[in-house]
Image (cartoon, rainbow, N blue to C red; front, side, top):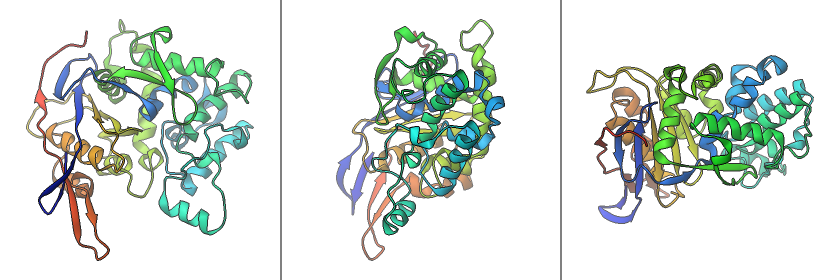
Length: 353
């Protein structure tokens, strides 16, 4: 990835990209597939499994949009807030229990500007991880566990979350490598190829055989996948969020989920691709080495990787042009600089050990 200003290379973003199927077979790659990454918000679709399996949908009458919110990194717009507030009211849980903080929130600049204008301080419910935290709060309500300490690693709701993540990644909770996420709960570290494999599972949860330890996840993961597909604006937001824009440009074709420090997991559902007859599901994991504070690296790399994988072309690719080659404009609207994705994914055929 290069940032060019009138042909002058201003900066370079380096990274790693892996595409794998649900068995762990590598399909395409760039860089190091064994790069260790912290999942950050890419974990959310898998962690929500615990609440679904515990009967959370029936207990709290959860709608697909509300399930999608629990796997989201939402922008803190008013419709996100109303959706979560509705869930909390039905569950009899106070939103004041949310322990995710409010630093730097909401992500949506229009909402943030309006709140600042009105002198309103955003609450934790506008934090992009409030949906994830709602999973633990609702599970605690359902199981009659303490609510105030739901975020502590020793809390049974966090143990349930860890268990769901471990199952999705084909391991056990005691083998997880953990760290503290920005919202105060645990995050987990895996190799990039394992992230891609997990997202292939999300794309087609029923594809694993009964002998695979991940097979039991299929009903819950299918529910979560379908909820996310049906509600792309819940996953991120309405204004300049790549995850939502990608899912709207390719409806029912993929799920895109970003994590902090320039990680993105993409679940590609079975379907025809340009230049190939293959219809299998796969997962794509994209990581930009420097953390990509301006988003341009992950935006351009994600779009280009999907193009090379045969998933993105034609009208959908044109709809996403602003992400494929992000520009910086001067005060007069002139293009000052452009980010250009220059790489080639290599086809491979390797099994995960």
